[in-house]
Image 1 (cartoon, rainbow, N blue to C red):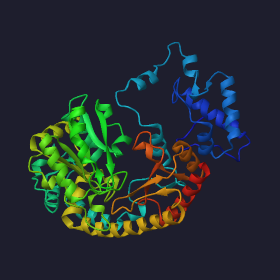
Image 2: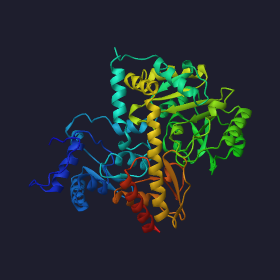
Image 3: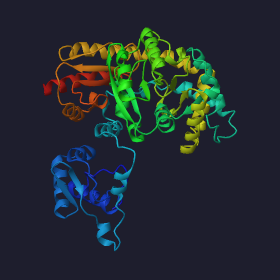
Image 4: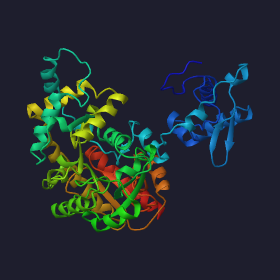
Length: 483
């Protein structure tokens, strides 16, 4: 049997569907794709993948269990018990699952893995995706940008350890407009803010360090710090952002090494820290000699009014490591961001980056430099802000119509997100599963705040206008079904 990556059973074939699916599973096992101990997709997932009745899947799996290839476990799902490769070979194959379990990088939470998988199903409505809609991709501008810089490209070799000097010079000029005085030598080009966090965790923090962060926070949905041996300690938020009066006690209680924060249109709450609180936060961290990682990925996505100045613009003590990115404001696939900081720190991070990937894409760096130098990036931002306002207002209108009796929320002044707070707790896992059945993908709040059973992160940036309306109405129905 030959199986392509996107294999589907042939419903016009004379071979029963259950037999085709059984052969597919047997193929995956016998060719070593699914090693002994692998948990295969659930019956529901299989039925969804292959667009068949669940009973068809049950028949196929039951026969494979009877043949000794699979084993059904009450809580652990169905796992591979044996394979023809190991039965036919005199020397058993490597136990690849033991290698997988031995890896030092922690796996994503199962819900996050499901979100990452279902986001690529074309028919699903994505109510939690934190990126701009494909409808907003600036194709005409991108054609101008690529056409312009491609004429001058003589090679696409590796760039300097800190990244393309041309791009760093343009980023330096851009940062100047935000009140940040940073020379190109103080800037490191990275493949997005996530890589910056990884470099920081392995480059300047000792193993076992405690990192203070907002609670809730995007950082809880990834394991970049934990996999590097760091600990996270959440400081509660209020309507204006992190509660700065608790920083000193938390710092001294945990001996924290650094504070990670998203002051502008925070992920997942959408809150924007006011100017006065930014000054107080910086003052407290200066007194405590507590460095700050300022993640500024959403700054340019303001809707009602421009965000206050970055912390870095008020930093006279080289206290702040500033992270910027084009992933949210332009397109995530460009994979271009930057770290701004004290030169010795940037040198250290650049050295580690060269050891891991030998520099970000030269092509992307040239494109990013052209976006900035041509002024097209700033023209694009004007359009995006207008579009985000339309989408935010659509979301707020639907929420007012269908959620006023079951949830509360704050109107975001920018960014992508509305932090929906349900008036009564419920099982977010059941809600997640029920929404999937209805063709809706949500980001439950417990991804960003442990033990949360009342929050959902709503993104108005990705789904089309009609999908956004329909998806929110269906979500309200799914919530009511669980009450």
